[in-house]
Each structure stands twice: as structure tokens, then as C-alpha cells.
Image (cartoon, rainbow, N blue to C red):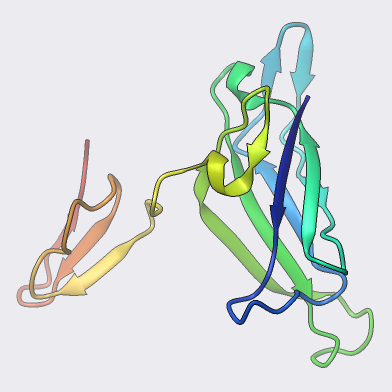
Length: 149
């Protein structure tokens, strides 16, 4: 089993509210040796003191067919519905987390610098080399283009 670690803060470097949880969502079911691995989300609860988390995960580099994890972050806002009324904040990190047997930090294990859901709208193509699967809407003529391998 591999251990994946990290720390979670908001963009103001503040701790997330109590009750925040981080889901590691498998891309699909798989097998490894004689084990069957269903695509059930595995949840990590970060420390309320410093935002650190540590989660044991099956290394998906030895799973067939190839799988990866997507990271799902959920947090409550007690001022919205009232105390204990459910999660209302949700982020889905649009990158693949590939976990080797030795584990590692989230930032080391994420693959790709942007997801396939990037949509650029403008009169010129996006700068640099867009990720395969990214879209560009040419605002001068309304054409939609998609980057392919």
C-alpha cells in the first residue's frame, strides 16, 4: 500500500473549515493480482490543527486496466444551511493522480498542468502548447477547435 500526503489551505493560506474532506476517486474499477478493486471513493480528513493529511491508497501503477485518481474536495459552510446541514463547497481537481508503490506528496503525483476541460475563447489561439483535449472558440467566426494528439 502507498501513502499519499499533503496539506490543504485556501488561497489566503487559511485552514479549511472543520469537516473538510478530500476524496480520492478512482477512474474506474481494476484488478491487481487476485484482488478486485471497485471504484469506491476513498476519503481523507485533514488535520484541523495544520491542514495536513495522509491517506493509504492502493498503488494504481500496478492496476489493470490503467487507472488514476481524481481529487474531490468538499467542505461545509455552517452559515449557509445551518450547523451540520451538509456540504456545499465542492472542487474537482482536473488532473490525474497516479500513485506508485512508494507513494508521495499530492503535488509530486499529479500528472498534467491543466485538464482536458480547458476552454479558451478569443480571437486568437491560446498561448503556448494547449493540453490535448482543450478547446478554443474563435470569437471572430464562432468556430470551435479541439486539440488532439
